[in-house]
Each structure stands twice: as structure tokens, then as C-alpha cells.
Length: 303
Image 1 (cartoon, one colour):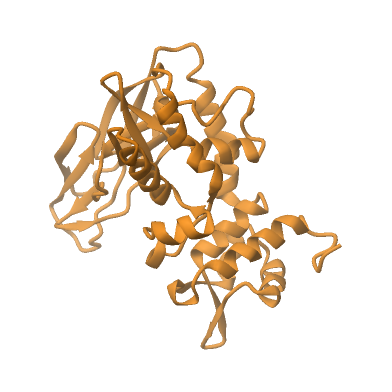
Image 2 (cartoon, helix red, strand yellow):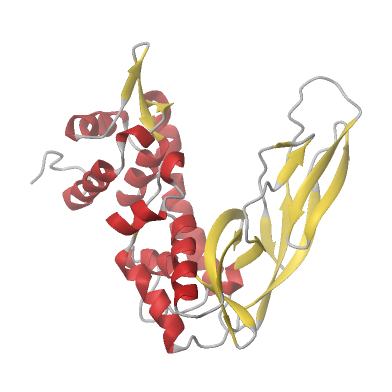
């Protein structure tokens, strides 16, 4: 048994530490204090302290220990704990199962944001990016609830991928889903070298490989429509029979490897278009207030 005998799976810990060692030290920004780790990542302070002795990078400032956020996300996912993992395990399979037997599926999507200024004022004007494009919304002072609500419909039926597109999908077999620090989260050279990729990097790699093979292919971003909340996500699309087909093999393989999806039903060639709502090819702020992006949540439900 390993140094954490009796605790979490040693193989998962070993692989996590291997991946952590590949991330350049200079790319890390240590912003998460140890006191916040149990609440936000589902990892005990005792476990994280043990992991620090095994090689988990940290920084000490004014007597407090701080960690890189992406390291903690990777650790919590590999040890199958924390709110992020529970959300993935509970809600993503439900969203996918809702597609079965449907030609298209409907959602009600809302944008919820608050004015960032605490002082009294008469109202706010938000600029938002919606599935139909940019929109302006005025909100009266003290108004609660969504600043925007809309129904949207996504297709559940997609053409079968031809062999050349399947070659592109197969590239994802050589990558592991990994959160990366902001300094390298777009660095596809690093990802290709080490076989690690986030959703943004994987979408760009797949799009580049598709174009290299003569396909029309692009990296896009938008919502992953998994009730009760939509989340920002990136995936690739290839143009087949006049339609842009969403492909996200890294997500499928990750969920099947985690035994969340049945690999006999969900293969990497299976389009997840019924839960992917494209907003554009270039990441843009979703909610702006007086020229600055503000935090927002995106409640979503099935129609």
C-alpha cells in the first residue's frame, strides 16, 4: 500500500502527482487558502497536507498555505469527490438520457446577474450574449430574478461521421481531461507533448486536425445544457452533409472511463449536440455591465 494507505485510491493519487509534476511551476498562481479547500473542493485539510508532503505544490504567505486552483480541481476529480464531480456524476447522465428517442429537445434558459455596484442607483443596463446574439437588458433598482429568459431547441439527430472525421475523433484517445493554470490553458503544444488537455485545448486540437485532413472544422464555445444549470464549455464541430456536427470525444471518454456513461451505448463518435448550445467561435463575455464582465449563473430546465 502507498503512503496514504487506508485512504483514497493510491493509483489515482500516483497519477495525479505525475500530472502535477508536468505542469510548469512558473504557470501556477497560488490563490486558494488551505482553509477554503474542504468547502470548495471536497478535500480534507489533512489529505491536502499529506499530498503537499508528496509533491503537491503550495506557497506560504503570512503563515497561510495557498494552492493552485487547477491542481485542486484535478485532485478532487481524480479522487471522485467535491461538488464539481458530484454535479458531473449526477446531472450530466440525466441530461444525456433525456435525449433518447427525441429528434430535438427544448430548454428554458435564464441569465441571472446582479449589479456589481453596492451604492443606491436607479437601475442597471446589461449587455448579454445569448444563443441568438447580443442583447441589451435594462433592470430596475431592486429588481430580482433573471435579467433574460428564452426557450431554445437543440437537435438530437446527427449524421453518422465518415471515416475521415472518425480519424479526428480518435485523436482524443491520446489525451486525459486535465484542468490547467490560466498561463497555459490555451497552450496546445504543452497538451500535445504530455497528452493532457482541457476542453478548450481539445476543441482547438481537434479543429486543427480536421482542417489538416481537408475537413471544414472549427472550435466553438457555448453552454453545456445540463439542468439545473448551464455551464460554459468548449467543443469542436466538423461540417458534414451541410451541417456543423458537434464532437466532444474527450468528454465522452472521460465519462465512460469514470463509469458514469455506458461505453457500449456512448462512443466517442456519438455527437452530444443535444446538450451543446453554440454561442460562437471566439470566447466573449456572457454578461457585461458598464463595459465590464460580471459573474452570472444560468438556470436551465427542460421544456
